View 1 (tube, rainbow, N blue to C red):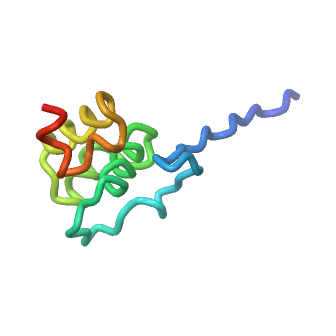
View 2: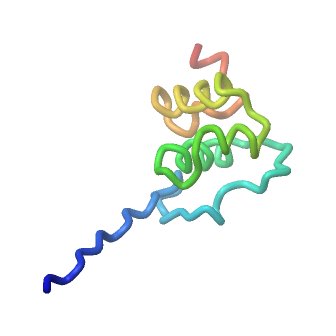
Length: 90
């Protein structure tokens, strides 16, 4: 009889470099979206902690809004999510 193989789940690494769990995501009633919180949501979706549909429902986001956050992270890092920098990066 062979031993069952277990794969260790790869932990999500948050924007600050620390391991991230579902508990590290912003609360559903978040009203003030700072760059760090946006980056946590993007990381959560990309790592599989939460689905895109669930994130959009939980945070009342449109898919386009989430994709703009993800694009900003890809192009400019977490700093690209700062509202004061949007015009600089466009």
